[in-house]
Image 1 (tube, helix red, strand yellow):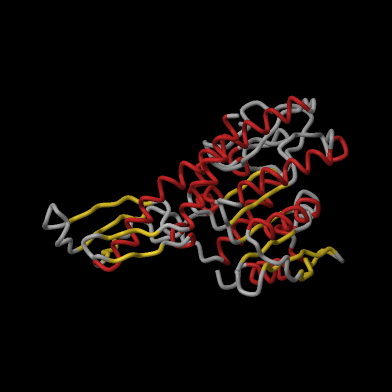
Image 2 (cartoon, one colour):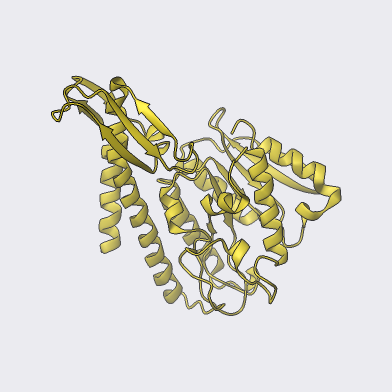
Length: 335
């Protein structure tokens, strides 16, 4: 019941946001705020300076942007005709963050209930990033199949990873932290993404600002051993659809065909975009290919499907070097 109330409130709030108009009394004007403008301003700190407490002679408004994808700590001065738009965005930051918190808690509750009802026994894992990424305007989403293993690892959090990326900081298969075969491939993949998107921070910062998680949160030794497989995939599709109806990255990556097929369907539904063209690109690893799916003609929304990096170690293979560079040039163009 509590979860349904959250969802109802979230839907009502989103409907209000989509129609929001803000009255700026001292300018006597109305400014419409659209969704994309809201997203580009999250999150932020505001400092208002004015010479008249009534704000009738408000001359300027300064804000300090802390959003990872804008100029960190840059101070911008907003002239009076831009004040209305900015104040409305700031007001909606809080609403958006509350919605993101609701989505996270709702999803975790649903996972726990589904896990118990269907008799899973190897534990579960949802986000492989901090839950705060959900409200930080992520541009990239990395969605993998399901957590592997036949036991519940110690010190591996289930709902989210608040102490760093598991691809950097966790010990997998008895190896040193971050030295597992798949971990190394994913680190190098993010290094290539960082290069092609001209991200100015470190690879760690880039990884930890990306929305990442498991499509199916239930752990299994391998996919064949996953109980109630169809129901689990349907469940994963449902929870990720709910997430992507609010949190809307532009670039998506998966490393298996089953997840990519479902994520492609979710993006088309959540973004209301045609599924678009699928382009196959050579990986330099025999006949193994990667796929890039374009959604819409000019939306800039794309899905990259790579072969599974635990088997196809593309990012440490000299024979795949040129092909991988070409794949990520195509995937990240105009970003």
